[in-house]
Length: 263
Image (cartoon, rainbow, N blue to C red):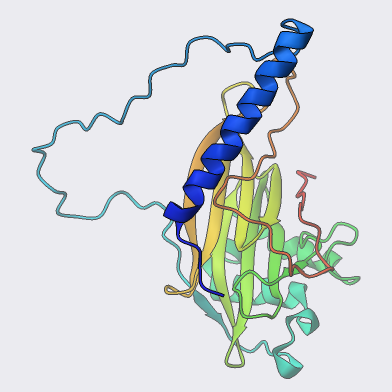
C-alpha cells in the first residue's frame, strides 16, 4: 500500500479539529462554563543557550581524567562455552588481587584487609563475612549473552569496588572498574548506575557507565549531583535518565534495581 503523503492528510485533520471545537462550543453553551477550557496562565518565554567566549582558542590537550575507562584481560579464568555463570566470583577477585599487589598484598597496600577477609569466602560470594558481594548477571554488552556485574568491599574503609566482566573469544575481560563510597547500584539497559553519598545534605552523586560498542568497554557517560528528596528528606531519587532504556531482554536472574549496602 503506498504511503499517504502528510499534505493529503492535513485537510481531514483540520476538518476533524473544527468539528470537535464546534461540538465543544455547543456543549459549553448548553451547560454554562462548567467543564469549559480554562487558561493556564502565562507561559515562560523559551530561551536558547547563551554561548560564552565564542573566540576562545580550542584546547590543545585532553581534559582532566574523567574515568574514560579501560579494559583489562583476566588471565587463567575460563568457563565451558564462555558461560559466565560458571565463573567463580571469588576467583575473579583473587585474580585481581594477584594482578595489583600494590593495592592488596604489599606491606603498604591500602586494601590488605580485603585480601585477609577472602579467607571468609569458603561458602562463596555473598555469604557470611566474605567481602565479595552477591554477583548479578545481565547482558550489558548487547551480544545476547549475560555479563557479570561484581562488587566487593575495599577493606579497611567504607568503599566498594564495582566491576563488569564479559567473555570475548574465550577470554574473560574486565570492561568496567569503579572504586568509590557506594550507597547503591542499579542496572538499566546497557548501563550501570552508581549512587554515592555527597557532603551536601539531601544530595547524592550519580555516575552512569554505559557500554560503548566501538570502544568495547563501558564509559562514564553521566556524572551528576541529584537532590534526594527535598521536603521528603531521605527518599532517594531513583528516576532513570531519558538516555537509559531498561532492556526488555534482561536476564531473569537479575533485578532491574540492584542495591549494594554499606555493610
